[in-house]
Amino acid sequence: MWQLLQRIRSFYHRVLYSNKVYNFFLRPFDHLNVPVVRRDLLKEERKQGVVPLNKIPQVADLANPEWRAILDNWGGFFSMTEDIFHRKIWEFTQIIYILNKLGYLYPKNTCLAVGAGREEILYYLANIIDRVVGIDLYHGLYLGSEDNPDIVTEPQKYAPFLYPLDHLELKQMNALEMQFPAEHFDFVFSASSIEHFGSIRDIKASIAEMFRVLKPGGVCVITSEIKLNRLGKDIPQTRMFTPRGLADLFLQQGFSLAEEGMDLRVEDHYLHNWVKLPQELYKYPHVILRFLRTIFTSLSLTFFKPGHAVKKGERRHFTYSPLDYSSSINVQLNKKQLQQSDSLELQIELENKGNFDWFSQGVSHRIAIGIKLLDAQGQILDPAFAEIILPQDVPQRGTLSFRHSLNLKLKPGRYQLLFSLKRELVVWFIEKGQQASIAPLEIFP
Image (cartoon, rainbow, N blue to C red; front, side, top):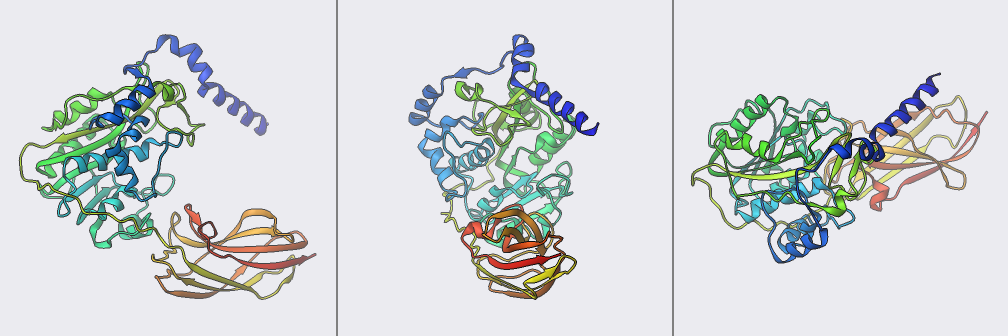
């Protein structure tokens, strides 16, 4: 009975979210509130012109040399092509493009990131300016550990690449009541967070706080999500703005748009190949999305606070320094032949030969030992058979030796156990070219 209900539920969801249902029942009564342009024409325009400050993500932006140079400056950590394009990477690149173009990446400037999480842009900016402050609630409620409480105390645990540790400070703080003095930061940015702040009243309160803590002459760069069609509405936990409605919320608090107009043109190819949520969450190109009757994408807006108290100038050169996963792991079994009821005793020796500390606590980004179960010929039977949590952190150039007991619960037969370090929910060290420790094992009845 339960399986039947699950099949019915699955069928219902496929029908409810399908493009056919939208196209047949809703499209005749719907229309886009934004213009559609041929992607080849916009691409040619970008080659010869500039990328506006206030705009939606357009794959044609890749054709602009100045914008492309900002993307390439991520050092390969973020890369995009026309086929592999994601609006979140576009948001980060657009924010840096704007700040660079307007001269706000002067090395001595201080910035505030609102709804910061553990976004990669924080670590990027920490390599360019002397002080980056990020605030978020850090309640640990989001999937993927994007707001774990330990992000505040151990931001380097989540770093995607090396950065000066003293340049980044994260604080647990409500964006509606910031604990900073007035006129404190040279620029403020927020990447797709204000749409999650609750009511319009709450969103206005957070914008008022951004205005208060920004120095006169400072810039505020925002990305958020906007609905593109007439039938669009809010989706769960996310407020869907109209472009003008979002801009007006900032203008009402005293900000002025840094540039007149918004480029809201949608490229025809990506409109006709939108990402259907939730089923196609990982589909590329990830530009235009649809959830039920709402068609939406991102929007970047740039605002000034009146005044002249902020220094501008050339940015610091940023040399990308990737994380080094160099390591050694040696696992010795006390027995290579066991009865089914026996526990397996292990002696484990680890060495951190890389350039970042290994944190053992939490879930996301902790360093642990993953175990893959192989058959006697080395074919994978279970790619995530078990894992071993490290008893303590391991600093750079540090070593760790400890014993561990495993209850295997395997059927009789010949096996191999492959032991590899892994950065939880990120990468296995063997994927970075590091050697695993492999041990044969035989189980008897």
